[in-house]
Every structure is written in structure tokens, then in C-alpha cells.
Picture 1 (tube, helix red, strand yellow):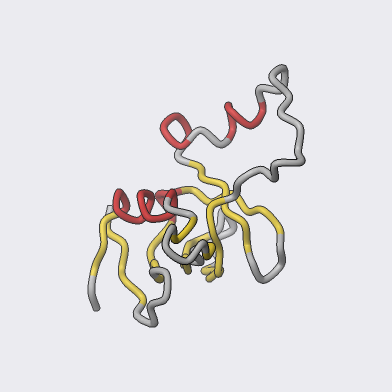
Picture 2 (tube, rainbow, N blue to C red):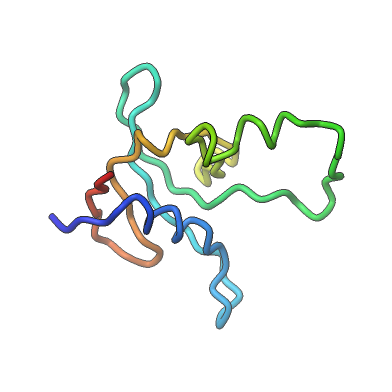
Length: 107
């Protein structure tokens, strides 16, 4: 099975829109939860809606979902339409946009 680095996976997750077609990019992630269960989600990077207000006094988002400090990223699970927080260290599989081949993630 082919491999991909975690750095490449995180860079691809940051690429949320296909500029040529204005289509949202959807990815697949396989990861291990904190309970030790293996999960698979169709997702994209979670971004705030333009209608959501930005509260400058609320430090929770910056503190908890800081990838550099805590290793946690926030994605939108498209099957349940809810945000999920995933530790980058627990990702072991990646499905690229418009691909059918799962890649092993190495750290």
C-alpha cells in the first residue's frame, strides 16, 4: 500500500476548495479515537460560516485547536454534519480528493 507523510496530509486538508471548479474538496481520514476505536470519516477542514460572529474575547478556539501546540485539528464530518476534533498523531489512513485509494500515513 502506498504511503503519505503527515505533513502532506495536513497541507492537503488546508486546501479546501478546487479553484477551477469552485467545488469543496472532500477527504477521507482513518484515525484512532481516545477510547482506542478505529474510525473512518469523510470530511473537510472545518471553517466558520461567514454568518458566524467572531468573538475576539473567546480564547477557547485558539487554545484548544492549535495544531502546533496541542496537535489537534478540527474537521467537519460530512456524514453527520458535525465538527470533530482529531489528534494528528492518531491519523493512520488518508483518502485524497477524488481518489479511491487509501494511503498509509507515516509520522
